[in-house]
Image 1 (cartoon, rainbow, N blue to C red):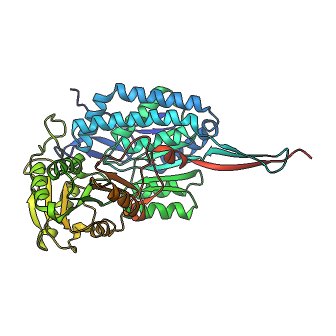
Image 2 (cartoon, helix red, strand yellow):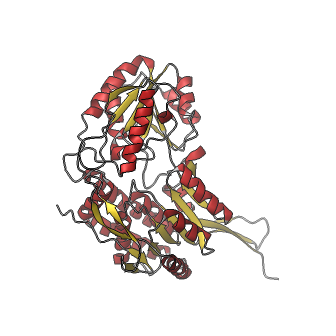
Image 3 (tube, rainbow, N blue to C red):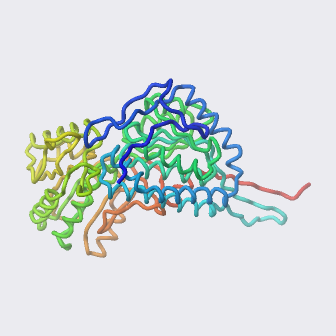
Length: 481
């Protein structure tokens, strides 16, 4: 399989720009710690060019037909599917996820483009019946304008795909600043759109010092909408910058997802399902199940089965086809995991498996399961964002729901039970933007993705995600005088 890494560039006004004359930084392979390539960082002039290009393009893109936008997005999806193998290799190399996970992300990104291509043709307004003869009352849905988008490193294609495809389908233009640690995925989305015939300026891709780029773009009067996916602390900064300019924003922030496991399920099967879900992408998933609350009568059996399944996960190089879990994305993630484990152990937590860095090159950490520790352990309030699972007992349903709702996060939550009445009660009472019942699979191109409380506001995916890039205009038309 070809595992070469693509050349890294900026994409501004329909043209590619390399490192010549620009500051740049190395992109590392987390499986080895070695450099994959040099990434150019945008200058202030580059950012201004991207802004003016996006604004010029919006004046015409907004007026294109839905059928035209739909066809172009569909062609880009076809190109992404045809390039799945080299794109999967690039994602695995730069982010550390395994090849099967990378393939799934590439194909999922193509599906997002296909769904948005379909939905572009269904952005309907409505006619409101008038109270007076001769009057017409219309509600129009129109693109909001130039979008500034910011995305993280854990899903280098899927998260940018949601923002790019939805904004373009709605008739907006987009300037996106992805993570500098995982740039290849979004550049390949730009390449697919470019090859499909995207007009100049409709999409611009820039990299740089995150705080400098975000302030520059959000402060510009040309930007009409902000969308961000990332941590809660950074999200608060981005939200405040948008609020200073009275610009609408979509914030998809962090989580610390609870899993409520009741004793009416097959405990061993549930534990194996939870282990597969927890250690996907090495736990570096904002919706990753992390706080496993297990009914006391099933607690000991669950810990044993869960730890056994976690210990059996093959950890190795992301490009190695036999690996079930790759490295963490960076050295700082390894340090964060070790710090959380050490703190938990210092206050009395027990280690069911894992707990340390693997002795090899790269950024590898063992799948880790902790149990029996006090509520003041730091890991119970700080999102681990890594291969670290916490198992705690509960006695009754009310206690489980209270534990699930105890943190300020509310992105995703899960429950395993066969009690129909309990499912209804959990659906009503668990404070979360997304709830999985007997499943850990939540995200889909056609379903809304978003949180409550400190986990943000607004949705991506589904028609709700498309609505985020539209404004509502009411038109009242009276008979001519």
